[in-house]
Image (tube, rainbow, N blue to C red; front, side, top):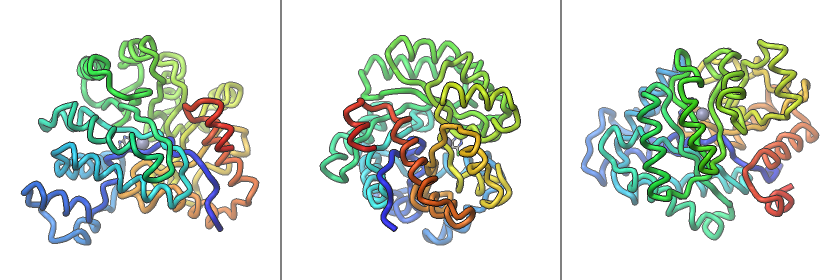
Length: 320
Ligand code: ES4
Ligand code: ZN
């Protein structure tokens, strides 16, 4: 079946680094990797939780050194996303992960942005960029990076919050979100992935986010579900990620059908597709396999992705 046109709203560009590209970039940059070959690296992708994934995710990005590296990674993603039916992509990147290893902000931002600036002609995908802050690093550092991004007039439409969730509540980042909102940026945050429903409340009430990334643990709190349904807050759900990071036991136990049935504004995305077994189409195929999702549900998921995107009404109508 041909893919339905949809928007990718939950994607970490560093999570699209395929093992083969990691080896190509390592060779180009004179870096020796502690793996025999791409297949050997891929055997390490058996994760036990979010942190076990993050450790490898941060280690692998060390091959990204030049602007061209960031551009090549992003172009490779866009090519693959087009085949998955993605017509619009809001792409997250983790500037602090690069700054921490000595890669300047301009290098990572301009490298990704160069690929995004030609995405419509290269891949038929409209794109925008979201700078995500690492919640397991100090909020003061996030604030400094945000001010630097604003000072360089970085082509970002919003900010996000990612990395290790448990123990790092949204409340720590209030000031960062206040500054971003005042600067006219959209606000999203990971919440309710490994962290509790209380973190989803905080993201809504303290950070005033426009979307929640993941949010699957909202089902543990009936009052929260009612709030999310009433306000139709977008929840960007990533089923293969949830299985691979053991947030759910198996795809057949995924709460997405229950979330749809409750009237939540859920859509399906791919998170870190190079690590979790697939791109947006693979995530949908896994749901269709496990639950026999019909055309009505698939059309709803695609429409939810489009109505939850940060795009003009004109572009929204093009995609619906
Ligand atoms: C992430 Cl799956 C996930 N969760 C939190 N932070 C992340 N950064 C990249 N992938
Ligand atoms: Zn994510």
